[in-house]
Length: 458
Image (cartoon, rainbow, N blue to C red):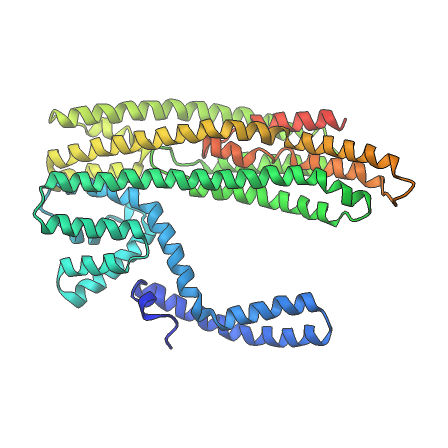
């Protein structure tokens, strides 16, 4: 069965194509029970359920038309994220006689490049079909779903065909690495701002929706509460997972768990009526996170210093192994690959690699500091957004007192709405805190927001 356009099929490796085939087959089978369910809902006049089941039936039955495209979108994003790491790995070999095809095929698994390895599998297939490494590389470039990887392969083949010097090839790879890092941070900044806007908008809209609650329609406010309790932690996890990895230490699972779970505990304590106990998890978590961040900041500074020393030693032809090993915190897998590459790449190649990696990491650190500066203003708005909602509730409820004789107002829900808003105050700054400090977030803004709101509803 031909499940997708041939042009799409050429862009997908065999294993993924088989998986897509099986998934589409299962979805088609599932569409028939959904069709029966659609008929049942239609008979029972449950039109919303009827519409949902119909949409799912059509989506599942015609999965041939979208599932391959969805996979290619996923591949495109994955390759874009992994490309800077691949390029940093390639730099030491650029000045050697090894060609790009051999480097890609023998690329170490320790780099953990899942999506690029999918492209390498396709490269092996194309190599078997064409028996020509250059043609295989050209065809890979023509069919890869990621535009930047396509341009890199095209430029590399053209540069190699023209007989350009190895130094120019090094500069070409370095240029794409820097552009990749910049674009990754730019996309991350855009994502972070969108999450922050949704977070702040959610908090502010709750105050406005009090009007509906006063008139007895309070379901929307409870929907926003559920969204807040789930959406804010999930968006925070997305920001942690999508943060660029080069130039920053790997995240500590326990620290990330504390930064997300403790604010959730505080939120539920407020909902349960233990308002003043809710501050305790944040007070316990804050010193743990701050001490860990202080420790990691010192280690990062040391690692940067060791990387600069290793770069200078490599330029002078001296041994650099010890210093480079001590800088692994900044890009563990890449630095390990550079250490292993000296036998093939030689001192000159490794020297280029260390210098290139240093510049890439410093660029990444500069962009990280830039987003940190931008997030300060957003964090200040997030801290006071629950308070603004409480103020809006007070103004609206006082205004409605005047018109109470004309409208059926449910004043018992005013206090409930205050509690709901207060319960989200420990979470209100969490995504922006991650945007500000990455995988070592701070709970200080969470404490400030919670204390302000507790004072307002005391």
